[in-house]
Length: 94
Image (cartoon, rainbow, N blue to C red; front, side, top):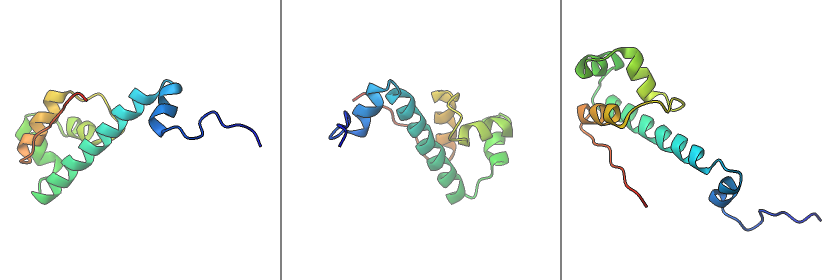
């Protein structure tokens, strides 16, 4: 049986050894935030068009905010969207 150099390691250490940990973490964070915003919008019966109007932006921008694959959204934009659905963005260094 061939020796597996990753046996016993964590997923984080595996991704780190491949140099892609940061990319995967950023994508996961964006996916969670996009999902949480969509859920909060649904709870408040708010449409993308309604959120766009409240933010003074386009529906296309809201599509980018809610797209889990699109990482090019500023923290300020996320904070504004979150505030309009009664939430806030919380970041921290660990």
